[in-house]
Amino acid sequence: MAQMYLDKKMMKRFFKWVKMIGLVLILLVIMLLLTGFIFERISRNNAEKIKPDGNFVEVENHLMHFYQKGNRGLTVVFETAFDPAGHLQWYNIQQQLPISFTSISYDRSGILWSERGENPKSGEDVARELHLLLEKVDAPKPYILVGHSFGGTLVRFFVNRYPKDVGGVILVDSQYPDDQRFLSPELYKMVNQGLPGGFLKFANAFGIARLMFKGMFPNEKQYTYQNSIMPALLFKSADAVLEEQDEMNSIKKEASKIRSFGTIPLLVLTAADKKRYDAAIKDKKLKTEMLNAWSKMQKDLLHLSTNSKQILVPKSGHYINQEQPEVVEKAINEMVDKISKPK
Image (cartoon, rainbow, N blue to C red; front, side):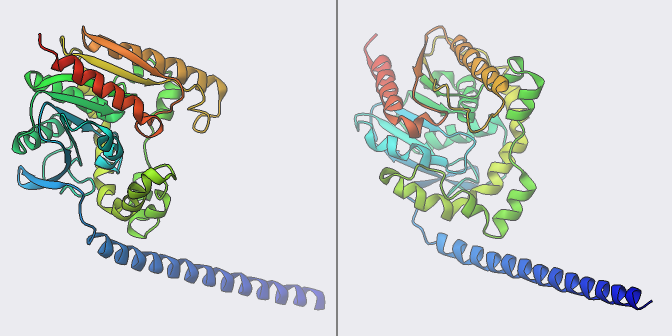
């Protein structure tokens, strides 16, 4: 009896300590979240004081931010990937391009300094907004469109709607909108699973997201500016990026119907580093499948134009514009020379 009494007493103390520890942990979590929430609000207030590096133009009742170099010749227009960094992905490349022609990068609606506006996040609306932006700033025609990844899919809508304004297209390791044709169900599900929207919205509210995306650009001197701006302004881009993700399947479906640019010159830059999927895909069979499928999809992009050429970039992963920007710069200069020559 005495032993049973002692056991009950010890169990009672044990559960008491468990409850106390649990309560302390809950209080610590609440304190951390409160601290993160306050930190996020202070950081956002400080971020609002950061001066934009470009200019603004009103497009259908909201302001859109763009960064322009040069104001003559033709215009190289950059379309960013599924990425909260907006025009920052092209910032360094624009510094290296000749001033003998114009270059414009911009932030899609809701990204970085661009206001969200009320238009849907469809491929058609993105193309229309970009065209209005270019018209309003009187960007010299024709346009050379440079689209990276998802940006390559969005470029299709622009070419399809405004073919007479387009002088050339450069796809930088472009997304292939009808990728289901080339991928097994398992791999298709893996590569199209997307970001965890609910968690990221929570993380964005409590200051976690800016820590998660702190190293979006390489930790190198030439990216000091981007690495300082990106975490500070991530909160502005987060909702719009997740909104684009919600519309991704619809955009890809519509883009896959646009199968020809006619005779518009096309350069397809393809990342060809065979180790580029090592970190993301551990299964060797799936990794080999992805490498082969990506190669086939990139070659198929050449069919978009009767005047196309592929450029393989052996030592680069998906972000060619960061890893080997000189390849993108060379391709742009090649395209400018090609369409500038008298016919």
